[in-house]
Structures are given as C-alpha cells and as structure tokens.
Amino acid sequence: MQGPDGVKGRVVVNEKTPTNIETPIHTESNVSTASSKSEISNIAFSNTDAVGEIMNFLASDELQGRDSGSPGIEKAAVFIEKVFIENDIRPYFTSYRDTLSNFEKPAYNIIGVLEGTDAQLKNEFIVIGAHYDHIGTKSPINGDTIANGANDNAAGTTTVLELARYFGNAKTNKRSLVFALFSAEEKGLLGSKHLAKKLKEQKFELYTMLNFEMVGVPLVGKDYLVYASGYERSNMADVCNGFAGEKLVGFLPTAKEFNLFARSDNFPFHNEFAVPSQTFSTFDFTNFDHYHKVGDEASLMDFGHMATLVNKFIPVIEGIANASQKEIKYN
Ligand SMILES: [Zn+2]
Image 1 (cartoon, rainbow, N blue to C red):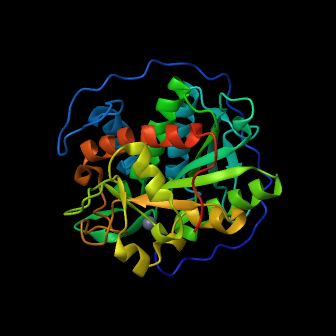
Image 2 (image 1 turned 60 degrees about the vertical axis):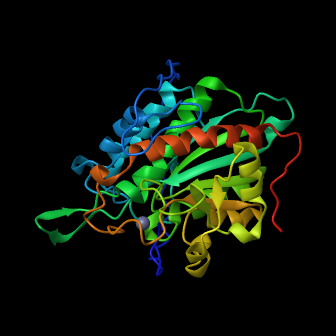
C-alpha cells in the first residue's frame, strides 16, 4: 500500500525491451493438505505449503525489500514469470514485461493473460492485480535494514499467483483474465498508472479490476474475511458475496476514512476506465504493527488465512468471469 503522501516519479521514457519467454509448460496443480494458524475451508486448492513457498521467497532477505529498479526486485520478476510459464499463463504483450515509462530506473510490470473460453465474452477482460515492489532497505532496527514487505505486498502478489495457478490449469473462465503484478506502486502507483493508460490507449475492454493488497494477516472481530476499498461506490461486495455464498467481503469504515480507494493500484484503472476497480485487503491499521517497517516479515504472516482467501475467491472470480451479463456496476 502506498503511504498517504505518494512519492512522485520523474517521467523518463525507457526504450529497453526485455527478452521474451518461450513456450509455457503445463504442470499438475498441487493437492491441498495442511493448515497452520488459520483453518482452511472451502474447496482446498491452495494451502499453507503453496502459499509459504511463494511468500518465503518474495519476502526473503535475498530480494532486499524489492525496491523498484533494484537487483532484488529483478529476482521477483523472474520468479513471477516462471510461475506464469509453468501454469500456461501467456504474455499479454510481446513478453511478460511491461516497461514503465514513468520511472527513471528500468522497472517492469509483469503481465500475463489467460484467454477466456467463450468466443464473445473472451473479448472482455478482468484484471487481477497486485503490486510486487516494496520500499527496499531502511535505517537499521536491531541490526535489520531490509523492509521485506511480506504483508505489503508479497501477500497480494502470492494471492494473484495462486489464482493464476488455479485458472491456468482449470481454464474455467469465459471472460479473459489478465494477471498483473505492478512495479513502483510504492513510488506513487507508477506501474498501474503506466499500464492503465497504455491499455486504455489500446482500446482494452476492461470489465472490472480486482486488486489484492496486504492480505497476509487476518482481520480481527469482523463478520467478513476481507474488506473492499471503495465499498460504497459499487455493488462489488454484493456480487462477490453472492458467488461466495457467504459474507466474504465487507465494509471497513477506516478504509473510507483514509481513502484507501485512492492508495493502491485499483485507482489508476478507475481513473482511466471508469469501471469498478477496487482493492481487497485484510489490513486495518490495528492488526499489524509493521507497515513500511523492517519487521514486515514472512514469519509473521498467516499462510492458512492467505490460502483460505485464495480458495474463497476462486468461485467468486469464476462467477464474475462467467456471468452472461456484466453485473458489477458503480452506483
Ligand atoms: Zn506499501
């Protein structure tokens, strides 16, 4: 998540074109087993092991806090590309890499697509996104300088990658799904601003944008699993809850008070396309003390909670992707 005072990036056009990635390979999806901090319910596709494997890499010290343009975030980019390749998610552009035009260092969104199965509906797109960058290193606290960004936002990245793993193998989506991992969110939503503008110019037919941000630690004392930013702006939560068969998405007053709707990567899509573009999160400023600090570590994340969230969003996204009409609308 972006701080309340977003850093502005300088506008530099970057002409560098990264190398393409070759033929995708099918892999068998993992079968669920365990649970740890949270019980895993619902259809058990994701599990603590699958989530933990991704989280423990993305939030490792080796990646040095995934600052945009750094060698550390490059390792995350390569990892994301590998997950896409293994699960039959194709590059949306000529490669998975979408080079930011609004940041001074080479920085890349990683963008994959899974074409829909319906001849007509496949022309409509759902963007499922999360930022994979974080803030890098900070002045030491107890000798630790690396802001690992486990909750912010290795957690959202892991959610998107697990959803990509599910849909890439199941192929149960009539509409097309774009899996978008953004860079330079922490510099002022730069990756999502760049991509939303570019897609708009290319006449991309966006139905809705579902963004995942800081979902590594559960909410406490709520009768819903996640909140949606911009809850009151659309029927997004109602539609999601209908497909979930339970109250999965709720309203968090703090999210409205702090205008979280404008503080993550959903916002540029809202601005460019004026279609429902909202962020799902389980961070409420009281359930996690390490926001933008060196203590935001994978060991503090609840992998069971994260796997549950993935599993509960699978039928929701299937429902949204397969409905004959666009049901989600701004009020
Ligand atoms: Zn952040």
